[in-house]
Length: 82
Image (tube, rainbow, N blue to C red; front, side):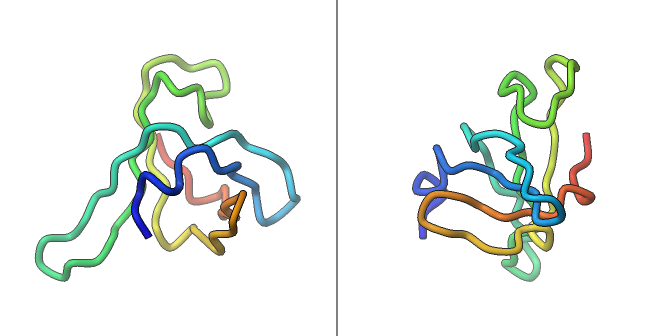
């Protein structure tokens, strides 16, 4: 699966089913030693997880991604960092 295929999918908190937002433009941080995905990097201007903050880049640990479906991504919102 390509990262571009994830764009537009709804992010949903696995704990309570709350819609957090829609995945817009994102980058992946990949560990160059292991080749494993470390986390999604979400731009601050996306408004995703911003809760009123502006222009703060946020990350979601790849371990927090519980399931990728055809129209949504289930994540553990406790792993979101700014």
